[in-house]
Image 1 (cartoon, rainbow, N blue to C red):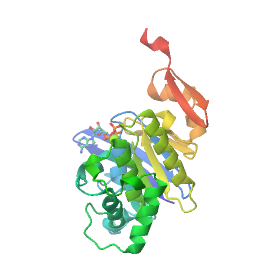
Image 2: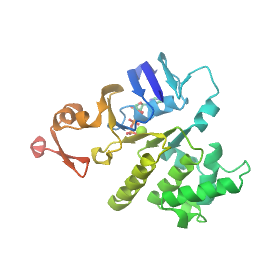
Image 3: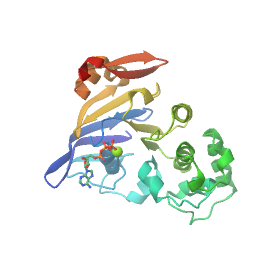
Length: 262
Ligand SMILES: Nc1ncnc2c1ncn2[C@@H]1O[C@H](COP(=O)(O)OP(=O)(O)OP(=O)(O)O)[C@@H](O)[C@H]1O
Ligand SMILES: [Mg+2]
């Protein structure tokens, strides 16, 4: 079991941010986490990474129960790519150094790296189509290029769990498709980590994400096979407006039915 969350809740002030969340992620599964702005996705990820603690319920991540182990060690087994991480990275650092720093899950490169690490970093950058950016500094990269570097960085420590929090934000349609292809490539590798992909957009749910969790107002709306969740009926119910889901190229495409605007 990669993640086992049981009846977990978290509040701030008097407001429930997460209410009685239960979620099981098993080895070999790749999940998509879909929900509107403010539904609680990032809060849930913060909990999985041990940055916040459940107020009720219990959870274990990678077989470790919270409160019984060193969080810094756990975080080395979790690769996390998010826009908040981007803000913390040093803009003057080269892409290669940023990828290398992923080995220690640190920001900045303080520990020594060897030839083997360099070899691994180069291979990862190649797999993510960003080898040519190795010597460029982070602040000169475009949003799409940055995301590739960050995913390569997250993979450097050979994590068991890879969390991608809205990796396609700010990408044009072609950069998005390229990045999705790279992610599919990572998911298809033999020793691939379990991937959790967070998004607002149904069309980003690649066929490799066979399971989907819908989260709404801090509660689990549905958590099961993507094929069962990604239907016009379930999604209309989820969003509270009539939408249509069409399947094309193994993916689902959502359109809002026009008559809601009248
Ligand atoms: N530390 C906090 N203090 C108060 N409210 C918080 C805190 N963290 C999160 N929230 C609130 O909890 C709700 C869920 O936030 P969260 O960031 O988890 O949403 P999200 O699903 O990731 O949204 P988005 O798609 O916009 O990233 C929001 O209303 C947010 O304002
Ligand atoms: Mg978020």
